[in-house]
Image (cartoon, rainbow, N blue to C red; front, side, top):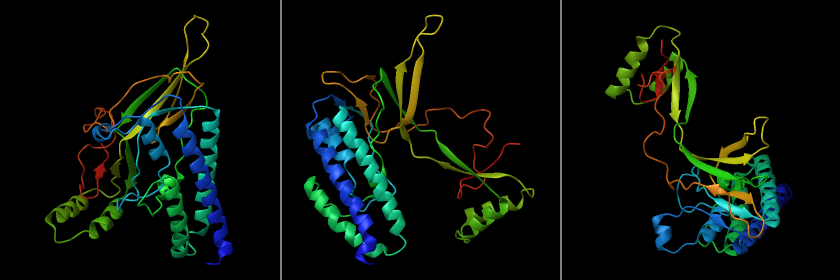
Length: 293
């Protein structure tokens, strides 16, 4: 691929790198309060919350041969002055520009693109003292630093462990998916027989349990209503990274709870009695369920 075609990609990566370094330096030297949960190992190794925040929010590399679809997540709160918020806003803008430049080129010459980005990624890693990293983690490159538009009174964190994606699937589509599995397996034949016994047109649903996510609720007090009662404004969002909260020097973080670093192993919510989907799958191998009659 000619250098002229790679130019938008390399330019946007360089801009993102400069923005990343600037944000890292400002966060590293900030004197405003912050909170991130630390693991037992992090406590034992005397890792500070500030160092963890710096590493987490500027991490755009694979740390090993892990699944590229997985990201390093941690909730928390970071007190931010005007300068740090401006740096985070610019970094988010640069992330979007890099993502678009890569999307424009990714189908043309992926090998050449990877070689070009690897050299620049290694240079950036050395600047941020992140040794031994070479491959960019695109999902971590793209994700934004979350910023609260204005200070709030209270922040409520909560694990959301009950999410499911539900997709309708036909009997024929289910047959075709089962045919791709080993036909010598007894459990596959049993599921084929179950499908054969269904009435034509029976509605089926393929259910995927989603990975637990941390949600954060920011809460403000609004003007009192006619009865003199305070009204509360809430804004919820996912919190894969610590939330930047606007603060003035000497101002504390808003009131907040401190949930566990890892999600609970058991489901937090009971299954709804009015669910339209049978709880037991008809086809376990495909996570396919029947709709209740």
